[in-house]
Amino acid sequence: MSGRVIAANILKGSAAYDAGLEPDDEIMAIDGKPILDFTPELLDRMFVYGDVGTTHELSIVHDGEARKLTVTLRDVL
Image (cartoon, rainbow, N blue to C red; front, side):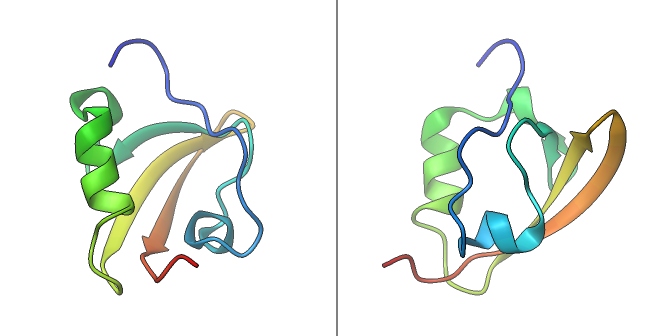
């Protein structure tokens, strides 16, 4: 990956939504590892195919302010 990772559409009721992620938030890191170190395939394995109940800490920038959010994976139906 290169460049920046900006949240776009956040589905209401999703784990990301419930954690507080909002459109236009910039994702800086996941579990302390820089976001640009992740491939799209790895992100799929972590968030789409990850075990229900697994948590990940997102370091984000929201309206210029650094924040940390905890996303807890759950079944997606």
